[in-house]
Image: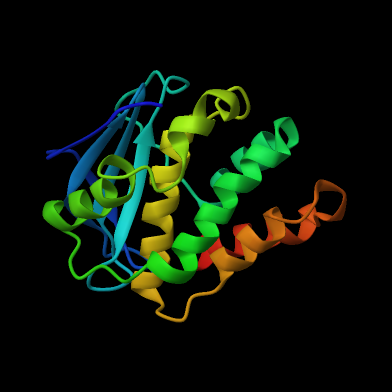
Length: 201
């Protein structure tokens, strides 16, 4: 299981409100999360007052100035690969994701360093909420992302969604579909849901 370090950052990016032209503004990252060979940046977003926007660098991206924006779809595809590799252990992780989504995910009160650090620390450093200690070594064999990155990204994406829409439900639908037995999983449906989520966030 990769160690997570959360630090302040002077990285910047441009953000703009969805479905608008122009009016971009440059913002500084609220936090930088170091997970093995991955850097996950959390920026103030533009959808709501306390919105967050994630970007990351990883070992497959040699240009450190170019940061990718992780979407629900990327998270989904990585979990599909892990589920194909080991469905039982993947489902253990997904059940913890479902628990977090239903009982723990809350809107952010602020999108500054202290709130982001407290959020990530609470579920990934102070406790092993997602059971990563027991399951990471096996699931890290499949997909692109290490499980610690997958869990951190899930916490941030779920919180982002609840911050921007208190009655959000689409991430819950994605998890429910992923929890189905592989021979019952409607890949087209769940991919469409995740892709649609990415368009409106």
